[in-house]
Image (cartoon, rainbow, N blue to C red; front, side):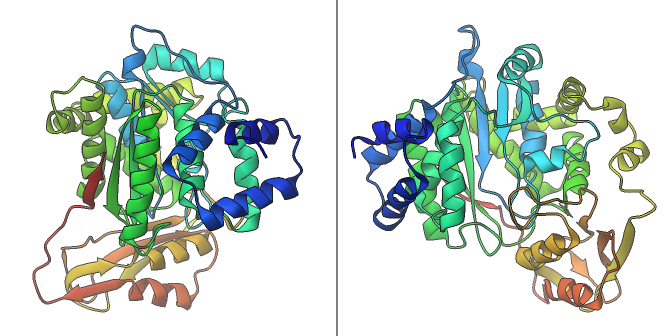
Length: 424
């Protein structure tokens, strides 16, 4: 076998049988790669297909973010329009979810007629005109990753830091970015449960992306409890719109503002990250981020009028569908809420239909859970604390399960930031 770059060339040209590629993936999974090899692998994957190029006059303003995913994680949806409202260009190429809830594309497809399958030409044109697009990966970008990921998925070689790093960073590098922020989540409902492993991944991705010329910050954030109040695809779009209008949950708004502040500073628009965070916060409260979101919806086939009144919004997303049932959950314990177990919520939502158990599986965009109470709030027995949206009959086990996710204490509960560390 020759160099890594030669191997990737043969992967893309189909000169290698699957068995040979699988053996190579298993060796990396078992033995790892050093830093130089991981950089070479990522660069080779980036160069395996088309790369986006931008006009010199604003190429320095092109940024993006990536999240390793979690329960209720809809940060990208308010963040991308807010960044564009502040003057950045955001060609956000996202993915679908596998597991408890849908990915960014699944959430966006809750919007009637919204297109995520833009061509490279359509993507480039939209970025030039309005500064933001949220789309799926095209066939021309990083074809090496499509084959490698499919083989990793069926051979149990997903959880390898060099392979995760090269997969994520190669796709972002192909976007022609100046700056990138990566939200690496850890906790009971994260891909990486232990903080130590999440830290290794964050350091790897930051190092490789920086080596490829992208100014990159990785943020370690907590995923033990659901992010925000909504879990479920259409419900998370509603909460994203609330956030774009300055009415979002504080933990979600914090992540949007902090990540946006990092990118605005990295691209040279903000004097520092705090200034950038204030700029993002202002865009959420002065209507500019919401207006940019409406532009994106129109450009990608949706109807912006669906979002101009709350009643229309809920109807458009199917949340008032007469076939959709709602079950209110009332507290059986009292005290100050100190924990809401994200993994229990995730499992319930997956069973409702919010996510998929296999690639290509069907999801129900309408279903999910709204948490009416948050960590730090006082709750009394009998208080309404959650609403389940479901299309089928809800069995008692799900109700018992959601009750078990809630923990209270008689002590005061300090609300902590979800962000625990930034890695450059």
